[in-house]
Length: 464
Ligand code: ARG
Image 1 (cartoon, rainbow, N blue to C red):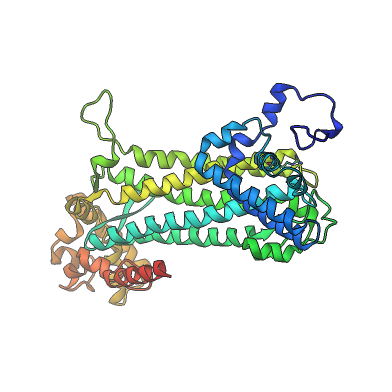
Image 2 (cartoon, rainbow, N blue to C red):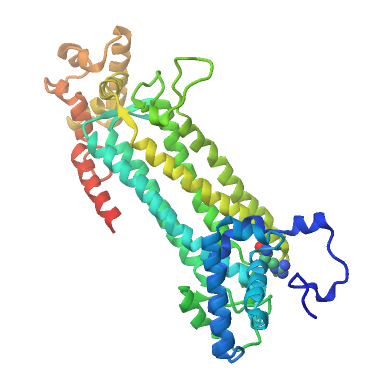
């Protein structure tokens, strides 16, 4: 009898140590590959039939068995998986179930395949599918940013460098900055998907398969663009997992920076925005507190995703060709990176819809602290002065205004004129907030006309 409970029991006489068996198990987490692995098994079954390894009747029997397992899993949910929770991994779970259901025919499915090419295939299918999910979630955040930009088109705030007030910008411009970062994330995921979408099945354990499996046909059936070209590489390549956690890490960098801006803007010190009660929490001790926990958690969870990216790199770096069990560690890193980035995208999308702007406070902040000083220098340049000279003279005017504790617009024409004969009565118009914004009129600038165009273009890009 070859009926060991394990898929590989034949050459063993002793049972594994119980604690080691648990240590070796991945079924607790790799059950998430169930659908991907079932799908790939169906394609492999069909390939074996075409290769003449399986008779039509056997192949039909196996395919029906696999479909029945999928139905039972869908109906039974977690309970179905728990029934056989001593399974080593999802692959042995499915195969054991198949043999239970269809008997002898089930024992032929693993012909010409190894769990090594099997798991690489299932992971690629899984990563491919969740990338499609994430692209959708990113689009929701982008859409909400555009909505906030459109609904608050007149709002402006100080733009910062070194966290010091620099020049005024539109709130819509701020929104579009994050829109751009997320647009790059979508592209990065698309690129990751393209490289992941290559079929390893048919590489078997490491050397390739001896059966006449038409790999190109299997690839077409499973929606892969190509087949892997080297079996040693195919079973030991987890670049696509690193690509995935890297792309996820950059999403988290972007969400974390957005969180940081929102946390600062919601503080009394800035006072630019208020987060609604729906996305805030209180303090157990201080009755007055309203805390931006949602954004703090997004900022905090970034570290966790970067950790997964690094842990994969470290896991892979010393592995000899080809497959090594170390690689089983890829799953939890990739799964948790996905769960975390998806939850953070969803939370961020909700927060954006729950921001109320304090437009007056934002405007006041954008008008105090000489954010129009560059505009004054540009005004002098417009009248023929070299920029370096204009910078110096404007610096002196700022110093004078600081001494008087007033803004540049509060200086009289005569006061201003005393610094340069080039200054004309139109200088006060030049120094207005509106003019300061309107002059940033080249592509990518914060002039309202440009930002309107950028919003329209962004809408169109989302529609693509
Ligand atoms: N659970 C294993 C993994 O995730 C599947 C591959 C096992 N292959 C092997 N030769 N032991 O990597």
